[in-house]
Image: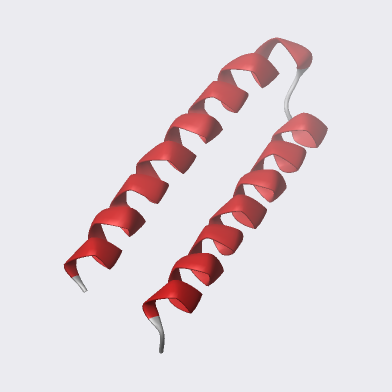
Length: 59
């Protein structure tokens, strides 16, 4: 598989996962906890994108 297509697919998948997590947090958590959950989700997204980037760089 071409590295470019793998990168596009993984990035798209991570963005969709982030959107699903944000929507899930908005629908299930109380109002007071939504801000902190949004920050945690963004932090996890940044870490996941970094790990994927490092793994793709090693290929």
